[in-house]
Length: 26
Image (tube, rainbow, N blue to C red; front, side, top):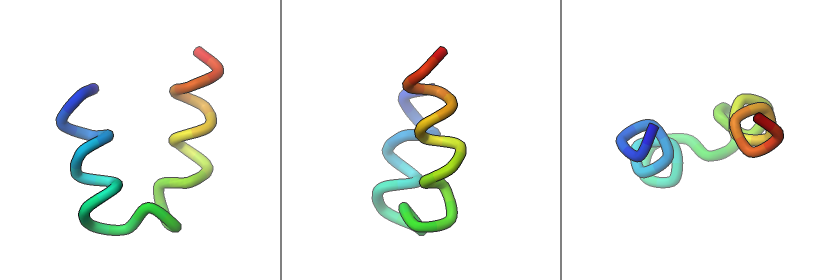
């Protein structure tokens, strides 16, 4: 999960925004 978070912030936080919220909620 750490990798995904780092990748999202570095690659496309906007695209991962919805998934980010889901992971945070989980």
